[in-house]
Image 1: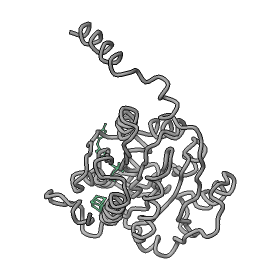
Image 2: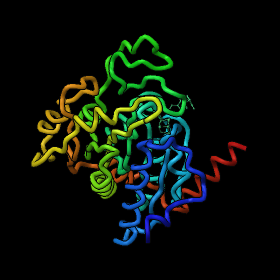
Image 3: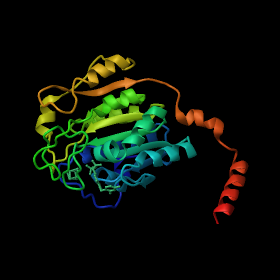
Length: 284
Ligand SMILES: Cc1ncc(C[n+]2csc(CCOP(=O)(O)OP(=O)(O)O)c2C)c(N)n1
Ligand code: SF4
């Protein structure tokens, strides 16, 4: 399969220069590669939230569910539990998963459910034209904070680490090859995988110059060490513009997964149908 086969007829409406293009290109290449390597496209499901990032599911010729704001994870979790053979990939925004849907994100990490979340972290609400989000720096000037945001940002990777995510990485939309590596690793990882992508929004938060100067890829780190991952992750807390920003895989471990543990409660099909019938009869 060629990555181009994954395009759809839908008109792409992202602004020219938007970082979402790189995420889509990298993901198309990875899915085509996985298909060639024995994970067929029909075993992949994409789930999106609401925002500019979410349009990606309209532009990829893959089974998908366009959900509602902040609710990618409940939908993805249900799909995974219903059919554990599927690889479920969520595309979410920093507004979508760190504001509206933050509780779902924390619980997905806590449960270590085997789904992947790609965070299009442009550090602004893009679709609604420029309000601050939980990863915007203090002082961020936007439509809802014309005098500058008062709050400090959160570090989503730090939050994911302490919440129990078992794969944690960060990429940047100017590094498509690295995105491909991280996306593939995250999809193949068994457990909750979280990839924060520094996705530049050229229209409302253009950070290309800053990221081009500050980002670097970590080398030789021990990704099995919680302490080392935390140390690297905490070197940049989404606020300062005078410290290097690490990219790469920071953490990966294998621990019990929700989708595994859930198996013991799965009903056999006839028992499930019997119970469903009772529920539906009572409902009507
Ligand atoms: C429950 C709910 N609240 C608010 C909105 C309005 N809304 C749509 S997109 C959006 C923010 C999107 O920002 P983000 O998730 O960061 O995605 P981006 O557009 O930057 O990709 C908001 C607040 C909505 N659609 N639904
Ligand atoms: S508003 Fe920002 S995030 Fe949305 S398409 Fe344009 S550049 Fe991309």
